[in-house]
Amino acid sequence: MIERSRRVRAGAVTLGAVLALTAACSFGPPEPDVAGEPPNLPTPSVSAGPDSGGAAAAAVTVLAKGLEVPWGLAFLPDGGALVTERDTARILQVGPQSDADGLKVTEVQRLSEAEPGGDGGLLGIAVSPKFATDATVFVYYSTAKDNRVAKLKLKGKPQPILTGIPHSADNNGGQLAFGPDGLLYVTTGDGTSGTQAQSPKSLGGKILRITTAGKPAPGNPVKDSPVWSSGHRNVQGIAWDAAKKMYASESNQKKSGELNVIQKGKNYGWPKVDGTGAGADAKFINPVVSWPIADSSCAGVAVLENMVATACLQGQRLWMVDVTGNGTLLGQPRAVLTGEYGRLRALAAAPDGSFWVTTSNQEEGGEPAPDDDQIIRLVFSDGGAGRS
Image (cartoon, rainbow, N blue to C red; front, top):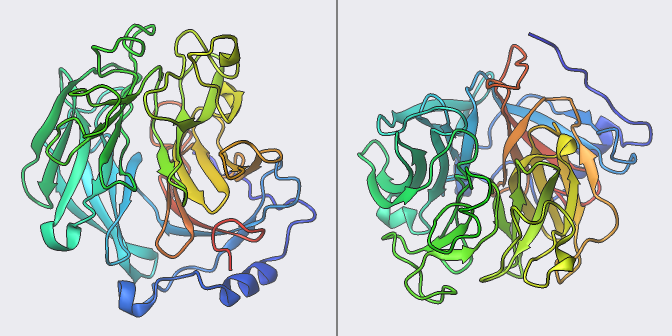
């Protein structure tokens, strides 16, 4: 067990300044009519990563602790969240009620259908846009022979809607999210040397776009195919901005981690392209930004206004990337939480405008501290999450 340092770079704002900012903002704990009484959370600490340039201080609050590889994160209409644990195959509800330690964590159910192993198990989760009336969630999980997407009502039995997604020890994709179009997007991994990512006949190494019945969505690049984009190594995070541009992380490449703008029918180059360099072949799309794999291998992605953030496993940091209106890089990426909480995985923008991020230290490659794994709430002082 280790105890990680908490560093505040010179030039970052003080805790008092951050708290004064958040008190004056329209964001913060959900209003009672949205999510019940605001939770009674511990006092935030202030943190800034060594790569932040002193510009991005974060008020950090631990919402939950003692979890085991929390992988997927999706918010409910009441302001609470559903969280999956990859290796235990549990679905947890976190909040909106609170207790002395933070938000109340309740086990909803365990999925016996999921078979953990390597980076497989119970992975992504998405809440139906019509949850108030259909009470349905969607999950992505591994079996002994494939990865699959299923729908279920909480505490009920999963009903598979898409099966036959390639399964491997290390690259299973696994993210689920509903896009602005109301359709379900599914990310998959290429567990081979790249043959699946470039094969239109394989679901591996792709981003898929399907209906809630699991069928290829109308308007996909190829009729009767669920494939939306191809040439991916292992996408574990997707999110959209207000202009409906889709962003995705790329991890487990040999050299580089990436943040991409995803376009309909485009090819992102794996295994022929690793990081920036697609310009040499017009059929491949360059990333918005790429980093050395040791500084990235990122998973979750979240967006707030013109800032895109991604949570990194090997890099043990949160990268914040400012983008222009057309999705190109503006300035230089900034890092926060570098090395402070270990491996970071799930990331989502909460209904109150903050970011929630999970640690992933209770797995191979992690060095768990006594409270791991945790869910952390972030409010930034310089126009990130929690902005007024």
